[in-house]
Amino acid sequence: MKKSTTFIASAAAAVALLLSTNVNAQKLGVGVNLGVPTTDGYSFAIGADARMQFDVSKQVSVPITTGYTHFIGENKNGIDVPDYGYIPLKAGLKVFFDPSGSGLYGMGELGAAFGVTKNSGTSFLYSPAIGYAWSSGLDLGVKYEGLPKRGFNTGQVALRVAYGFKL
Image (cartoon, rainbow, N blue to C red; front, top):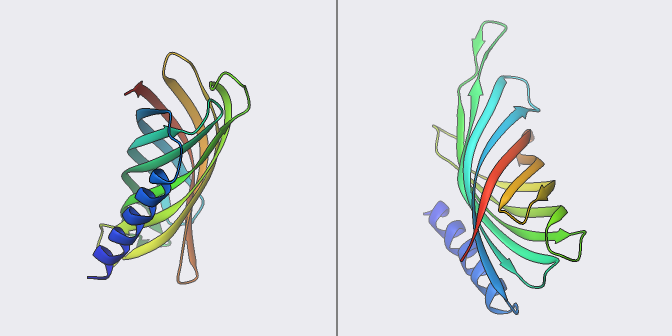
């Protein structure tokens, strides 16, 4: 019940944000994320995502991202750390530094991580990023994704390789 309430509230906030924005164009991007966990106990993080990007102007966009991320647990001092998987749901702001609406950009997203592995629950999620988007649709970025939960801060530094389609 708690997960569905959080999901519905997040979706309602995203829809309200989009309806109150003067949206000019839409893009759909699909990407693969390869990450290095910043928390002991995990050896690697891998994920895939889909991102809807609503252009407010050529330089400013509102991205909404979801997908799946999986942290691979490792054996630490004879103790097996279990894998950790979650479905992120994030919304944010993406700003291009070039007036053309492509090239170097900075982005920040906030949202929730809905755990899919045993006893993982739901966590707040934040993700600052910097990247480069070509006009052909190719997008290469580096992000930090943090999940603070009950005093245990899981995170990753990840490389995102994506391709965007204009809708």
